[in-house]
Image 1 (cartoon, rainbow, N blue to C red):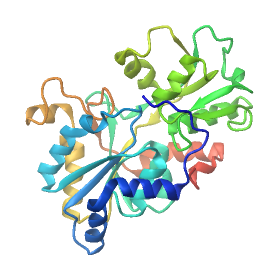
Image 2 (cartoon, helix red, strand yellow):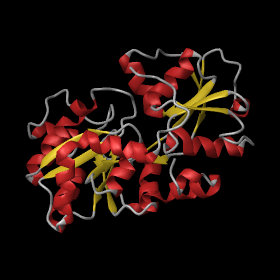
Image 3 (tube, rainbow, N blue to C red):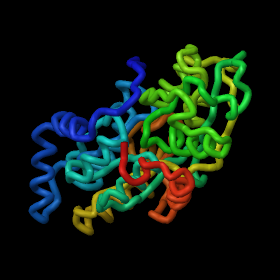
Image 4 (cartoon, helix red, strand yellow):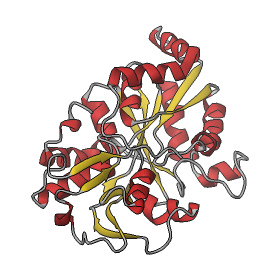
Amino acid sequence: MNRTLRRALPAVAAVLLAFLAGCGASASTTAQSGAGGSDPDTLVFSAVPGEQTTRIQQRYAPVLDMLSKVTGKKIEFHQATNYAAVIEAQLAGQVQIAEYGPLSYVLAKEQGADITAVGASIDHKGESPGYHSYGITKAGSPITSIKDYAGKKICYVDPDSTSGFLYPSAELLRNGINPMTGVQPIFAGGHDASALEVLSGRCDAGFADDSMVDTVLPQSGQLKPGQLNILWRSDVIPGSPVAISNSLSPQLKTELIDAFQNKANIDYLKANGFCGQDCAFGASGTWGYAPVDDAFYNPIRQVCAVTKNKNCTTGS
């Protein structure tokens, strides 16, 4: 696992060039055909994994196969390195389907992305999409509250991460700490990396989402009970959305909306042969998607207003 610490993201232009290079000829063809007024033969689905893993495309395979059957299109998956890459690629018309973090979705809309949020991931059927940010320290640390973060080496996830930077910033400000100048900020690049850097002692404390600390790392054997202390738990954060491009035809948009809201779930995928009894896709523990709309993400906008976080309007 690459856990190299990053104190800043690459320049957006460089990120976009790298992303488009990864897309190859098919992405270029996709953009051109979409510009001509007809739907492209290939739809590009991009996502940023919560953990740094090479298995993310395998995890999405059942949903990709289902989407291909429903739409009659080739679905090409691209694992982006950060949220800025997804935003810029969708703004450039290179991505038709994107799984965002809540803040990165709001930022994409702010920057002019013509997209519609159609669903947000949920762990269990029937629940409302939402999760929490955790403030964490290594067991035995002298840091016992958020106030103790002042001046310390603090691990965040990504400047455009909701639970890995935005909500933590709001909490630090509530405690009189500037999230960038009142601590020594380190952007670890993933929720797993942030938690593991705290565990290793390379960060004095940090932030990560609840599922990474409670489920993903313990299941992978990288984190044992009692190794991390949870000092703070955020209010419920609106769940991470999937957004589709409004450049697609009304018929194709309708097919994709129905697919995400009614078919991209463990029950349907199992029943229709897209995966076996041990079926899992996307983020660890994901059951499927619940319908959402743009207004569902207004709490993110409200936290942006409180923090006056420049990433809410300008990106990283």
